[in-house]
Structure formats: C-alpha cells, structure tokens
Length: 231
Ligand SMILES: [Zn+2]
Image (cartoon, rainbow, N blue to C red):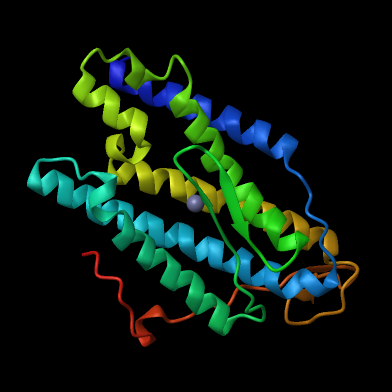
C-alpha cells in the first residue's frame, strides 16, 4: 500500500477508536420532556451543520488546489464558523426549540459551556469533549509536531494549536464534533419518544405502536440574508 493510504487508514482507525471510546463514556445529560424541543432543534441543526461543513470543505479544498497552497486555519476560521453559526441560528428560528447553547475549548484544552440547563449542557459537553481530546492529543509529549527541531515551527505550535492547523483540518475536526452531536441528541430523543406527548418532536411509527423522532424541518437557507461569504 502507498504510504499516504497507510497514513489515512491510521488516522481513520484512530478516529474510529476515539468515537467508540467517547460513545462508551458518553455522559447522559439528564433530559426530560421539557427539553425535547431544544434537543430536536439541536439534532436537526447539527445535521445541517455537517452538510454545511461538507460544502465548505469541498469549496476550500478546490481553492487550495487551484491556488496550489494550504490555507491556514487562522486565516479563515472566523469566516467558515460564521457560515455554520448562521445555519444553526436559522434552525433555531424555524424549529420548535429556540434556546441558544454553545461551547468552546481553548488553547489550554479547557472547556467552557453556555447552556440553559443540564440536558443541553450534556449536548455541548459531548461535542466539546471531542475538541478537548484532540487538543490534549496535540499537547501530548509524543505529538508529531514536537519532534520538529525547528524552533520556528515548534514555538508557535506550543503557543497556539491553530497556528499549525490548516483550515481543512479545522473543518474536519468540527464536522466530527457535529456528527457526534447528531448521534448524542438522537439517542436522548429516542429515550424520550415513548414518554413525551409532543407532536412537534415525535410522531407515531408506521405500526402505530410506538413513537419516533419527527422529520427535521428543511429551511431554505437562500431565503435568509446570509453573511456567509465563503465561495
Ligand atoms: Zn466544535
């Protein structure tokens, strides 16, 4: 096998292992029927976020290919994040749950969460635990960039992971965060389906004997005045 394929397979295997481990350790935020609408909106928004990341990744990969150079995460991070934030905000406007939640993982791998209650805190914590794990992997003693004996690459990496990250790497990491969020919110909603009498979020299964998650709204993003300008 070609070395590049081997490398891709190793990265893939590592990611799959990480996802399995995270699923096993996933903390269940205590969610009840009052949380169903916010959970549902976040479930739908995270799926749209994954699609948005996919389209941004393909657009910026083409641009890198055309220009013949890698784009650094720092140069475009705010612009691409704006595009995805808009998609999530449109879901909050069109979906049944409008409360805002968010989180961040800083350069010291410390997580901050802004959420209205324990259930949504669990959703954001699950997403951020992925970034925390990636962040800690970067700061491990045997992280690949540490083997560099060039201080001009070593020091900036030590100071800020972003300075060594390409925009595509950044977007791939975010896309995984939203995939994890989709799985997590789906699991919580399925646990609630049989208990909550909320037709905005749940619908009867074909057999009519139990309940399942409603279809997600499909907002027409083109109808919104968007600031996203990544082409
Ligand atoms: Zn994220």
